[in-house]
Length: 91
Image (cartoon, rainbow, N blue to C red; front, top):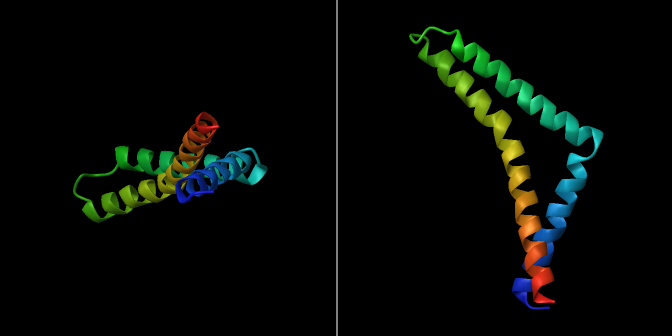
């Protein structure tokens, strides 16, 4: 197996693991908590004075952190699917 095929296979496996994770209770919990955290921070941002720059920065960071982990997992899932497609095309 050449290096490119090995990389595609590893990415496909990670994507599959990510898909499996999203279908577990823990995966669903992580997704829901991430959404809740981001939504709560967004609501706070809507009602905060523009003069509270420290609090605004804190809430923005909270949103970025909440959305970041889910974005990484989604990227793994997409890359895995693309890699699987490339592997299937190469057969």
